[in-house]
Length: 304
Image (cartoon, rainbow, N blue to C red):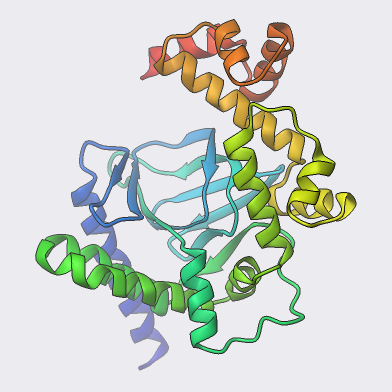
């Protein structure tokens, strides 16, 4: 195939994916696809960065563009570049290019690190003595090897009987293709037993379950069998924040959810997520979200 024909084929695949996602997201912003681990998103206007937790995912934009902000660094991605994370990372998601006529469309696939480990063993990939990327987030190049299985995966939604059988096989293929992509080092490191990334992922799992408890960083470092200095350094490199900042982010976002969905006031929410001082909670809440708790919740309800 010529370079021109390859580009035309890539464009056709992107247009096909965009048309399918457009059809499945009419009147919605975020929605489950019906295939486990696969979700779609649709945005019809640019939007300022919004707080979110990015799990271990691959995010593919097929129309428009977005940018993810982590630790003060921006990671732009569009139909030519996908975003990938190897640990759960607090971030701010920005919609850069979108309109009602040409909405920002895309998908998110939750990555299975145990499947990555299985493929590493099956393919006899060498992970020994290889230093992984310092950050838990990166931008990869969209190739035909990446977009083509996604096109087949989304097309299965029109074949419900075949989806249950074929979707797991295509998802396995996508994981394999990622191990041959320019983001392979990130995944190899994240899935390697005993790697710093895997140890930090274990610490994050502990924090997500125990965010209400007082945090002793030295004890958490010991829990994942790392020295305190190494643990702190690698945690900050991978997530863009310190362990204490990560815990604070979890607490504040859970408090926000409690006020918004359970109609609790700021003081009640603060105590439920582990704060002893409502005034400290209000200061830290405003620092993260830009408004005091009550004004922020009122604003969210008025724009819902």
